[in-house]
Picture 1 (tube, rainbow, N blue to C red):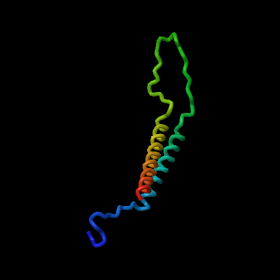
Picture 2 (picture 1 turned 180 degrees about the vertical axis):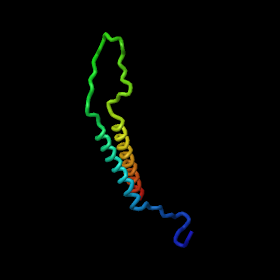
Picture 3 (picture 1 turned 90 degrees about the vertical axis):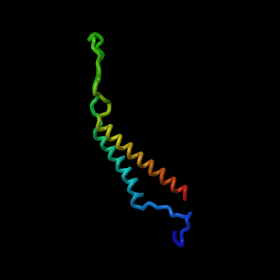
Picture 4 (picture 1 turned 45 degrees about the vertical axis):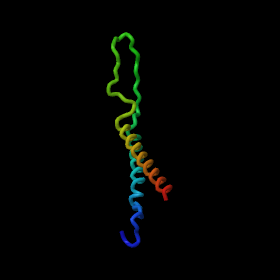
Length: 99
């Protein structure tokens, strides 16, 4: 406790401008990288299937997916980037309403 500060007064720590610019920039980069990865790994060929009622065997498509693993990873990275941006926007709105 000093001369200018009483026991009940505290100055809230203000984040630096660098850290407030890094979070949204990282979010935007993650969204763009995720979209790029998802776009570059999209499936371009479509398969076909046939119905064979007399073969007495069931077709099981183990390991098949409509979306490739690279596309899934790209979409997951884009979603994480969007979550980071949503968190940052909520934090900024909360700080603005408090002051």
